[in-house]
Length: 472
Image (cartoon, rainbow, N blue to C red; front, side, top):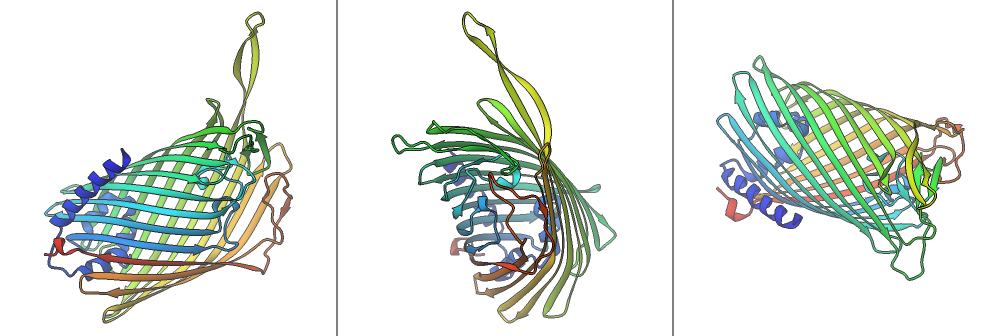
């Protein structure tokens, strides 16, 4: 059913794409769309009203890309250290008079290797209440992404509506075999208002609904595995299936976000983006909520960009502050009828026990150096990241301070009817003197700055083209 709907949506996007054929060269359109050289394209990801002001009237793209990522020790155990991704995308954008219609359909197939102590997807959104086991494994996954919307210009400003839907399935091919299905829906309403002739202010509100159904099964006859429901990433855990070969768990949640942008319509000038987001996801097994994780995220991005006849440059600052709180539910079963042995399970207590706080501040510089068909895009990000967490009623507390350096370089080659891109990125970060994360053994300490660096490498290749059927 998902595949049929996905194919139908692709045809709709392609129809918008054909309507979007124009005389502007394909390579120039793809360059503008893909490189985030225009700051308005970068800031319009969550703001449908801003798409009315794109520097393109029509745009069509069919692209494929592949990513090979080796994080080495720049990863959490439950995320894996090596990733392989192959993706394809169809984009359609058409602006006529005061109306703009846009849509995207994408398919992604990936593999994560050497995952430890996790059987769930989107672990960064679930907080500490994850399902885990001690087996090292590889996860394969497929993702379908559908998004689209419209914007309309009025005398009171520009109004925009958009919706996106992500369907994902992931699985392991070795016991214990986990299989999860994810449904992630978001709806956004936005408003943009010109301030004078060169400035623009925009405001958007987003609502989201998230569901993940997880099932774990061992196919080998007689095999049983220790599956844990984790409280606080190992500060405390509950053994769920020491004598069972099957297990299931559900995650459901809602999210809200408010975002504000202030920028200039030209390629030069100051820009500002602020975002407030809140999400609460509940983890349930045996038809009862066991843990609820609520996260609040504050984001501030500001910067300045300028250009010369052939080149463009940008400097920016990104500040982020995230607070996560975990509430746990405890139940007790009572005998209500001794004759029939009837029992009833009641909620015994509900306590907020887990608390996590992440803060980061990054400074970055990026350039677009163009000569003929070639564009070189160097970028350097450096900053600090502060993390602290605690599991109340126990003595477990952690604090980690890290210095992070992320250099990268991209290359874009403009062909007659297509554009190719290659991006190579690496990262170094200071690491603590000793590891604090383990599902059963945790050390309590405050980590100082430690001048030993971890490193990782990511390579991404893309090729975007416009088939002959869409040529003007």
